[in-house]
Amino acid sequence: GAGVSQSPSNKVTEKGKDVELRCDPISGHTALYWYRQSLGQGLEFLIYFQGNSAPDKSGLPSDRFSAERTGGSVSTLTIQRTQQEDSAVYLCASSPSRTVDTQYFGPGTRLTVL
Amino acid sequence: AQRVTQPEKLLSVFKGAPVELKCNYSYSGSPELFWYVQYSRQRLQLLLRHISRESIKGFTADLNKGETSFHLKKPFAQEEDSAMYYCALRPAKTDKLIFGTGTRLQVFP
Image (cartoon, rainbow over all chains, first blue to last red):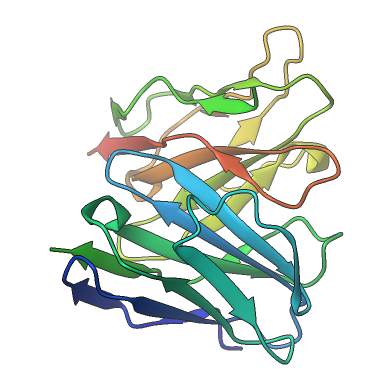
């Protein structure tokens, strides 16, 4: 079946602009995660959704970052007033449930802020 | 602090040589530990988890609580093992993964 998909695959934006990154999880997966991978860094947890609610937002680096999930499916990560340090690969992952520990990752969105 | 450390950015070996990718963690409770792998132009995917005590593609990893380590080992490396390997920890009662910075394994013919 189809895996996790993310769009766009690449995004170049100017400093100060807002961007939206989209994640389509595997159908039926209730858990959804966002991670960020900056150059030379490991994957950094951002936020976790169970259904449409986000019980763990502890990784969001600032209030410029927000995410939502609708219909227990698609999720959007929004970065407002982008800064150069936001440049990174943003990865989305989904899991069948919170009790299943395997996370299935998408291909990522490479964000470049000029 | 909860942390995963992978001290080697790059590990290069010849085909048939043994491989050990190091992972150390900092966590006060009982950890759940994983190894994820990313082959060239592919997605990040789970390789193995410590609770399963499984061997995947010839790789094994043993949790050593005394040394707070979860090193990944394979007795005879293959060229197709060349990839980026990430060690990850899931703290108890959470759903997030804390990743190390990764080790690139290069296996030469």
